Image (tube, rainbow, N blue to C red; front, side, top):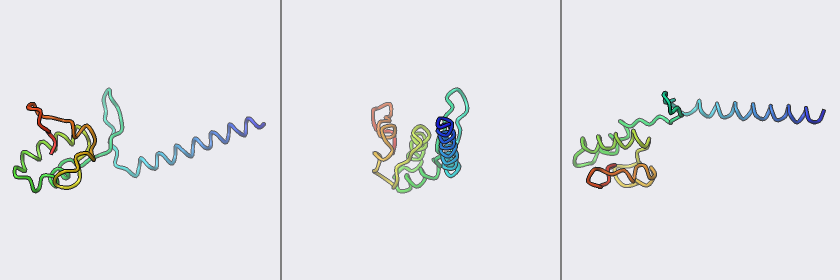
Length: 105
């Protein structure tokens, strides 16, 4: 009898955790990538974020193109118009051009 109560309690706890995690996913804007590498990715508005990031750049079109590539690969754009690159992690900071210069603005 006691083992049944423990089993029922465990199942109820599992159901509560599932419902709360599904509610968290519904509150975020999540996209499912289809194909052989299915995974959940948070949606990032690369165009809008890169427009803000490159707004004060001397060559905004070049900056926006590079920023768009970095955003698509890393799913992140640092805040502000310059600096703060470390906030996006190694993917953003370590990406380089063919000339070994930092790619991401």
